[in-house]
Length: 290
Image (cartoon, rainbow, N blue to C red; front, side, top):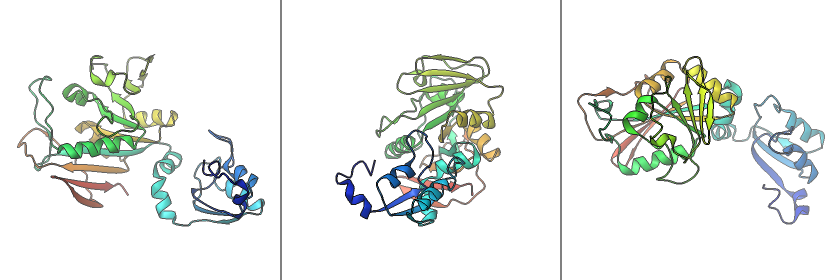
């Protein structure tokens, strides 16, 4: 796209191209980028990181060098790895990049005890923080919740308070106990329901039968579908399974100003946050697995 937007193409022969990721050398969703660079005679290319995709893995750099192009590798490599962390995790670990997120009270609870499923949502975070969460959703390819979260809170799992594309909604419902009248079955976004009963598809809703709704089986299925990131929003058991199985990359924990005294305990990560920042009335804690 950068090359296409240059109106005077002859100037490209005098240009230096900076890329965060090695130009590809194979036909994927587009023609090989390395071929395009060679075609327009760009003489110098600065590359942040080598592509971990085995279809590329240095072949793009080799192709450029063989065409007489001066290539410099590893410039701002750490920053480029961070920028492309979803892509690298997908190819190196054969699973999506996993971000855990929850809001908890000052005394460590996710929710009050519910007497029935007609009770309203017990909001913990401030309204401005909820808008931030919608921004986070817009940055990921999919969003995952368990059955109890759907039944208790009836979330839409969209980005209606921020804008951007809605993520693919992923729901764990082993025995298909969730009513199809709830918001997650709306037409606002594609929805995948992981269950142990049926495979089927109806418009934007797909039911995917898996032997067991474990983190491994779910992540394996997402990898097959080329979903590179998943935003896990709850509930407590679902989040804790990802922590116990050690298949998460980041966690974002919002601590509100409320206390419940009793209720559903928040998950526990036995790590020190890499950073903690105030956001309005709330506090945000960021964790990294490594």
